[in-house]
Length: 481
Image (cartoon, rainbow, N blue to C red):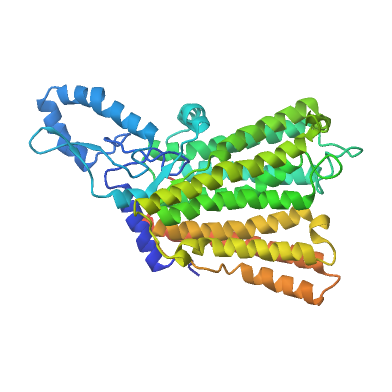
């Protein structure tokens, strides 16, 4: 079985060709700005470099000095202003046949939109990226970037199941319950920050080893889509449910706020060609890591006290997530979409085509919410963690298929097939055909969706690895059969 069509494989090839056409992003598989680099790094001898070498010898280094003094600072400045990534203008330094320095305004603005990404978060630009630039030097150059990405994802999975062991029903942080040990909070906090760091350095490792591929970008964002449910549900244990926490339904709604914020970025790229990375991700990951460590030091009882007047920390937690989505993520997404519309750079023009990627997520939300309200056994109250995991897994598959479509410039399908088994189980529950088996149906559905999503990911990675003649977790080229 193959999930990626021939049309999509051809689209991935064009995507790769665009990224290798002389305009190199700083970290193609990470959350970073699209940067136009005049000279590829780490010994990759491009055609431009081969043309430059004889002329540079004849000029005795004068052009190199001019390049260092004028060109590189300008490119760095353009990077900081995101002029290149926003599609306003792209400058590339190239030395022409006449030996004079000339500026080329490339005609491939459309190609640039296909693989550019914008990260304007000050925390990311001025704090985390310098930190990641230092961390990436620790890794050996034979280490594949996808292995770094996958390792960070597994740390989040480990945190999820570790907390599921100590806090299976989210009552561990409530009064008069056995709390999660302080050592566990320290482990979870350190692993969460480590996972965030690995997610930040994978793209830098790709550039460092000259191994950037569309598969790396897909692999990174695909795992990010599944990671949403892991870190949201894990952080819930700091407050939990009960009199001092938030209800499982409120957490369900907060989970959807995070999920829609994630897919909104890829909806933007599907329509504008540019991935505008939300500010909330970097801020939330640093904050969550700090909260875990603080919880280990002061205990969960510290969250019982009011933060300000009668405003509890749980209310602050809820307000921050909703406010970030409504005041930052959503307005910025609409603004970026409006800019593309005014500049006539939208990739789709009909309302139906523009909104197509959001059909499946909305239907998933409606199906799952209907199940919660119509459940005869109050399924969310009884098995909240399992229900969250089912929702997050189905959402991850929807997101991955959207990412494949936007990277390959193909049309997004309106309905994801995972909606069918969810709708079937909901129909059985509503019809009362299995009144005593709702929990069993949830377990079976979750297991089926998880195995199906893993199978989808393995097949897609295998297809693209064969297509690009690479190994997903090694920098060595495959040996011919």
